[in-house]
Image 1 (cartoon, rainbow, N blue to C red):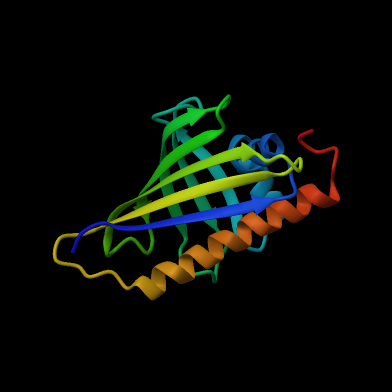
Image 2 (image 1 turned 180 degrees about the vertical axis):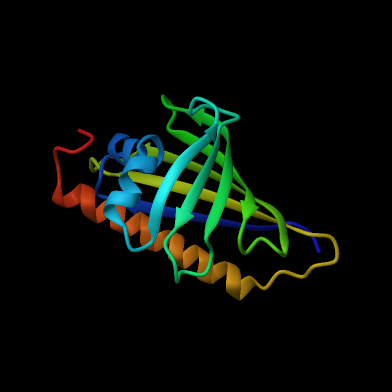
Length: 159
């Protein structure tokens, strides 16, 4: 089976720069504070935060996965583009890796529009369950919505 690709477009009333700062640049600090029921900690294993950096996301007990590691592949602060690859962790028994390409753009109404391209690379001989992938995408969108809600209720944060 080949690569499975999902492309999602989204809009937000939050300005692109604030979302990028929160969801990309301060992700490590914000998520464990904002969602302690899910994230125990996020730590940098290797690197300085730029391309090549390896980060480990440690989850709380009971959520299934205990940890995931991802590698930052590209980070363009001016164009608000962030690419990373999930390279290790619980629940990766059927995939070699998953790559994510995220781009935020300002919209005329003061908010932003974004694009997320996710590519799932299955292990040889494995057929991926697209419904399971959709469930994982729904969880990721829940995290995005929590960050968005936080930014909407705290207009001075990341301003």
